[in-house]
Image (cartoon, rainbow, N blue to C red):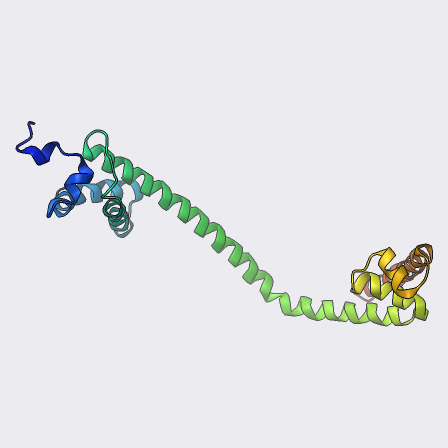
Length: 189
């Protein structure tokens, strides 16, 4: 087909700025593009959204877009990319929904688990209270406040070896006591 006038041989980005050109392109190509998108995704509403996205993107880039080859081929490629994006978003949404579903199932037990956690925490706190005073301080500074051995030694004005000994004593006592509590729990169950 030979160009009717000089504007037909202008690049597309120069023609899109001309009055009525964009509307003409939309009216001419949107119905075919809608069928293509609908074939890809199988949902007319999603296909309509895809066509809308394609033409919105085209409009936003109208001042700089350079299309090599026929405009129809460009639109077909755009439709494919929109479909790929749609599939990617859908897969992400399904993953998120699956995770939310898992969290909802676990939330059903969360109150029970929270009560159990609080009971265990109270039991451990009671066991820590049975430790000698200096041993309690070292354990609390280490496990509850997260201080390192050297920091505890500086704070309590004792050697690092003494701090390690207190921690070993505290953790050994807690391990034995928790094991005994666990055995009692199993026997009662």
